[in-house]
Image 1 (cartoon, rainbow, N blue to C red):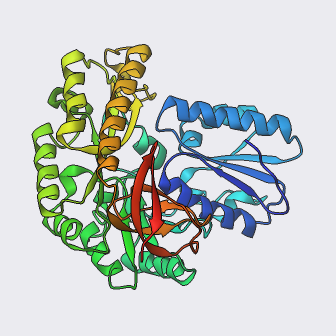
Image 2: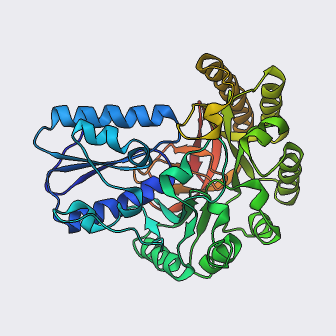
Length: 406
């Protein structure tokens, strides 16, 4: 980690896309408060490894920059407030990290029950737009409710205003993100599908959704995912496991057969859809047969983008009190899942050779993503931030080489 502080605050984001989006609000708030030689760590707590990385980064900053103020916010700060404070860092709560008062010399900010959209900066061709935070479910492995509270959504009008900011600065793809994105609007009487329809009334060229709870893809959202060309053919599902007993013990709200059926219907309606999934290996009580069901799900659902990690107990969660399979087993099973996912992804990528797609060019002028989120690398420069037609060539590891098409 190298942090160069020139005049304003430095913000280091860990974890999810929502954190990346919220990091820009943190930067703006700290700047408005007049923060100067300040390092702000916007932390993650999805696993114990994520918390360890945050602790390590904070210790290093305190050691290497003794004159700087070190601030910790985000989910890890909520779960381990006393530990970070004991290190000598200032702790700012998740709910007030976007308020200037939280970084001034006076009283800390006060939480508002209204969630303001979080828009990432202009340093990427894609804009991450956080529209929802928190979760009102009670999955036994997750500490999100502890760290972020119950689900809260930004208003449609506020989301549209943020989207217009991204469009005005030339970002041609917007990625909607949230802790439990599919629950958007539950607290205000609207739906994610209604938000997507409202956004598509703007001149957005590409709209992408982050992780979705499979049991919340209703008829309206399904129709948009399969029939709206500006909604990218890339569906990432929050599956977590492929065994019904484990899903029950996780308190997930779907079952294996429902997911297999959902993916089959998505693929039948829009064959080019690429499937991604979150999967946890080594959940408490998981035996070999249960793990085999999760492993088989990768092929059955054609999962080409896997977010796979070993289970780690989060303090205060019911799963932490269940019989554990052990870290070694969890890590070994996670490695097997990743290998299977890599094989599936490479087969899929090899099958794209010779096809044409539209690529969003990143700021370096060479790298980017296709509509199906395939990672692409151009042989020659293109205009950063542009959307260009390309012909896909050979696979090079986890990316595809491509050439500009006429």
